[in-house]
Image (cartoon, rainbow, N blue to C red; front, top):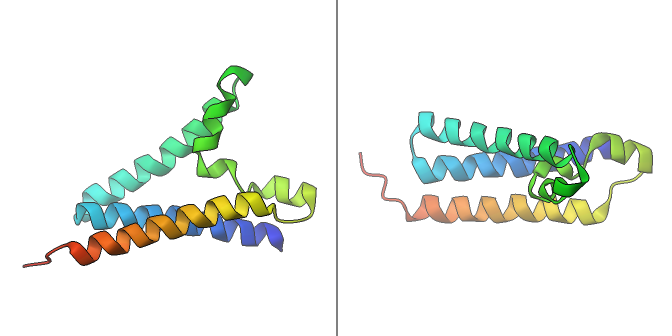
Length: 108
């Protein structure tokens, strides 16, 4: 059950990033493309960080590094430090997206 909660928080953070992209660009094509590049870039960053020990520090910049489902199952509980990081990223990007959206003049 805690693994599903971790995945939910991870998806919340990634969705908030997508909402931020949408409020910045106000164009569905560009915002979807940028959000996809952002998610794919984080996945590639994780995989590059897992290649060798010399570049393992790069993993810290990927959301996929936190709240890993297998790690949660092995530990038997939800790591609170990773939960705080993912939740903070999600809430901050959501608040920035709402702020940017409110500042826009939506004149058609």
